[in-house]
Image (cartoon, rainbow, N blue to C red; front, side, top):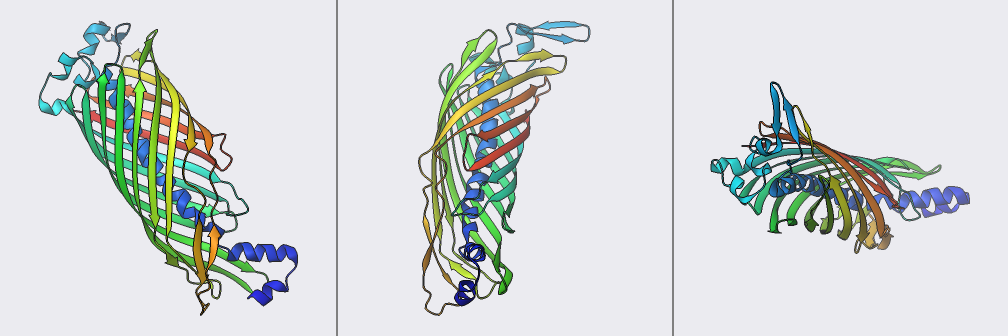
Length: 377
């Protein structure tokens, strides 16, 4: 195989060596990290709803137009579910079931990871579903749990692709130490199943697809702090958060592209991101409930997720001579912008749609669309 490459033209040699080097191995990292991020975002959307409930929706300046007349803000507050009224006394009304909420959030993420000298480019789509429940223990404390499923499908620029299925469990909580100050926490774990197809092309010698499958485990946690500032009927909320992920990918052995099949060692990926941002929301009364548009922006910094050297050797090499596959370091700083629209009805149902995108990132373009439903007993 090496002799065949040596006889090629320089441009063909580069193509052949790129296909042998397994620059697609970085796909495990990209899709693993993004799958967990989608679940964390779904839980984050849920806690945004809870945050509105914990502080109460300000209805003082609102009037709901209804058949037969109008309902002023003070009366309207008592028509909403107890957790959206605000104030200590309102949270105690009703049966214990009135403190229980169930929710379903779904997200679709479209991503484009750029090609570099060390990795193949990747276009991917992730679909994530999160189902959970939460309980308002006191007016200031909410605890919840959720189950998540995500499916990612990616295509490499040079051919081939990668598919990932993940199943996850999360616990989360929201606490108000002060009236306008909230602290949210979450922790989760996930099990991932990878299937990869890598195109191997050596002109006049080999054109094949190397296939592999492996498993991974993932652990993640996050904490955020938000301060709500009422302003002219709106709420301006500066926030900060810290999120950690660890991804442990088992080693794997390729098949189907002899003699270019590789045996690749385990991979361990750590990601630690910090974010500072601000969001603004404004409640609007309608004849069918309360609409609340929201805008947000945040700066994100990656502290970890450094490049690593993954050990590998050719399966048919009897000496098992190892070499390193170098992964790429991610961009350290980027901007995320988002917008959402939520609806809370008098009957206890609420729904939302949300957009979130990554900008000013040299490595990754990402756009996520989320929708969710919730019912308050």
